[in-house]
Image (cartoon, rainbow, N blue to C red; front, side, top):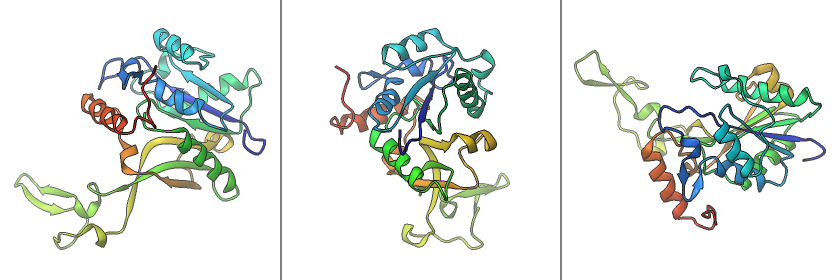
Length: 244
């Protein structure tokens, strides 16, 4: 808890995956991909309950082996490619509330962002709780550089002639000359449960953006991502230790 408020962490991990087959069970730096968000959540100072939401029996067994609860089986309609994450989380909240398990904050950790650390989680919880009069949710963001509109072009029809999408006159800007823009990168998502139920999103009218370094923004979408993130972890073995 933090200041008497209870915190629920939900880790969604379905069995199906188009980019990398069975990726939640896949080894990354000698630990299952699912094991990284579980490790971060268990090391947090504030989280009261960690659950894994899955429809897959093998993933559920792994989650339990790693020390987190799987108090329900996710319905098949919430495990499809089209299922919205918000519906998955609302199902989890409702399932717990029906057994009188009530929480104040909801934290979403996705296995596809395995570079999340307990320190990120604790910082986010402390910030949102301290700013709770002004903000209802918090998401992590990273500065957008290569994808900045001033560096982005489109083709004019099929001629291959480049046209800037954000400038009247073509100009090669230096990074120091552009206005910083940020993208929501997925390290973690945090919200008051009351406002999440209303908006069904983490991006709400009063959302705090917590900036994180670029190296934390890498996500697992394909085989190359496994190689890149494994290299990052290997370069910081004290922060991302291999499983004994």
